[in-house]
Length: 435
View (cartoon, rainbow, N blue to C red):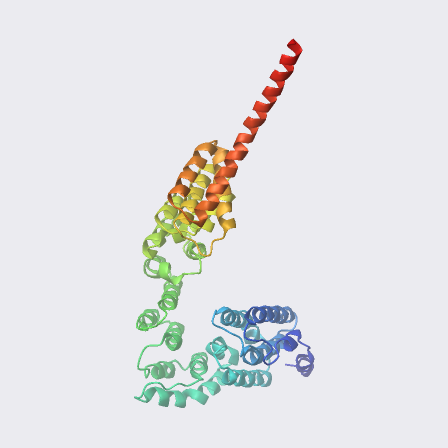
């Protein structure tokens, strides 16, 4: 890297540095810490568009500040840990691909390793896992591998359990990047029990040599107590997809390898990977394999399979809010679907399902249900059915629904009362005219 670029990297003023000072956040500072971290990611990405080397240096500076700034924050919710992992995943491609010279990259690596050593809760695990790529060359990767290899061999050869080497991921990732695959597999063979976090490097070594079936067998042999089956399934699925063995990949791994926080996100990921598969068939497979059809209601609705969505809602435990929103959103498209979805939402509320439901959630479910009933011209019957359900299952939600039904009755009777008053006034005028 030219000297003037090195000077620019050194002189660049980063806003996030002042905001991520040591002990900058207290015990309850998780939300603010996540916000500051997102701002830092945005700032570094913006610089990377025009100056990737400076941005790479910014990434290193950010990693150096993670533990000092966040060490006092309560991380029990997992939100901050997730945000730190996301920040690394977003930014690591910048220093990996930056056109930094050997001297600059060596300084980055030294600083990053010091940050890893200082890290009190292993925030920077992803940096260690991608260390080989950060090295930028086989020679540098080989140097870092040799720093830890003998120590790792000694620790894993010891018959006494519990030995831990902080640079394990750095060593294994560096061996992989240096092309020292045999040494990598040999040291991994010393582990007493399979540990996927380490063995994934061995699988990648076999893949890089084109030994795909051996890589699959190696990954499968990594299963065991407390090992992440979903991550192993995802690795195996990728190998099979790369080999063009799509049918085998779907049958063996698709339904378990693509799990996400929501059924909708899981379904979309599988549909994207397997465009030749019938989406409805995928949904049925997901509902059957998971044992909880209600989780796939939103996915079926989003895909346009409304009958299947109602089937999932009836046989599963779809959240009442999800059902209520569906009853609202599709009113113009399919009022009958909305009426049934609203009915199930109210039934689930009365049965006690739903997390921290409020009175407004109950009122919304009632309003969406009655809007669908009015569209279909069955408002009176729907209100009577709703009142009967609420009366049979007493509780706070029932009381709210009964009050809402009473107000509906009053509103419905107002036009009739107004018509009666008008007719009475007319009759009175005519009677006065006769006399």
